[in-house]
Length: 202
Length: 202
DNA sequence: ATATTAGTTGACCGTTCGGTAAAGTCAACC
DNA sequence: GGTTGACTTTACCGAACGGTCAACTAATAT
Image 1 (cartoon, protein in one colour):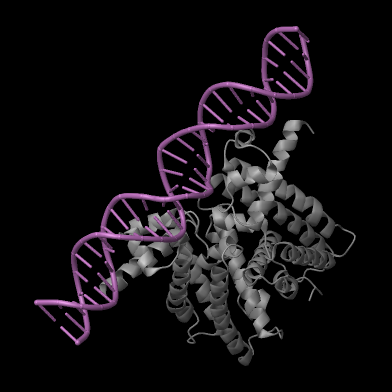
Image 2 (tube, chains in turn yellow, red, blue, green):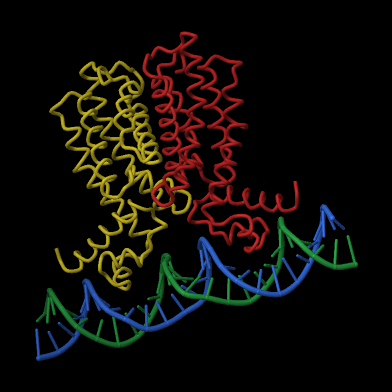
């Protein structure tokens, strides 16, 4: 990685961490630069605006999420139901760890930005929409497996089930963040099985 | 209402409208004052801080929501399932109207603030937690009615079902806001019946 | 070796931020 | 009719905001 790429990466990493643990508006370009040990002029050499930086942060977030959570959790070595269980366990453990580290359950980094920025920055809104689409596709994939294996009691459209599952997950993370209690994830998320009609998840 | 109370009310109303349509951070006390036609000094006569104003806005929001949405939607003139259907219709119509008025689906005013502010202002987080509790209680009430009427196929703890329903609702509103598409509410929210095991809601 | 490009530095822009303070105005009560 | 306290006005604070700019240095290619 070239010198410039390293600098850019530090900016992306600092921005991701700071914005996730606080919010888009609460973190200024100045603070991101200070954290990344980069001067402000350099920031604007790599990014035309704070908004553009954020879009790249979201892209990075998506890649990390797919690689570190979605792919391992939904690997096809288990039954669809067990994959969901594994996913829930990952999500729970992650929020527990965040609470230890920051004192707060931080919830979903995409959901946080979505609600803060959707009415203020159209390119950010569109980007988050795409990220949700990525998760959604993974869900569709598992649900198709489940239906093929006869483990799906529900005969609704799989696209709608996947969206419902995504919505439910986001909602549970919101409640967990609001209560600042990761246990909510463990108690509530398994009910996603009822929502999508998956056998033996409860 | 005394002159002072009127001023305070204008501040609360302006703040509520501006913060809901944009966000907490994007709206300054200056702008709130300008919108309410109140001088800044007066603002700080009524509220010690922007945070305190927000807590009162949230309280007002709760009262309005209970009176205008929850009480009429969950009135006991219909079966529990039909009450949920009516609630969904209200939520849908409201977001459609917001989109016409502002160009954006605004989602849930509590959820929006929760995700933006939970890690930044503890008194706001606590207040939102309480608001969720209020909705939650209404849900518990309907679910008890449903179980008494034998319309609840699920034998889980009603508190957990109510929380799951709340989470799902918030998640659907988040997705609708991110996609800026109120139709998602109509398509997705009825599945709450599957989640809580309510007969004949789909 | 030199020219070009990529990256860095730090000072600077106008504006807005949340919040303060003091002087002034108004209505109500004695 | 004067006093009191609620409310309003206006000017102001230091700090931070997102973004710009021109001068500088480091690395690369010819």
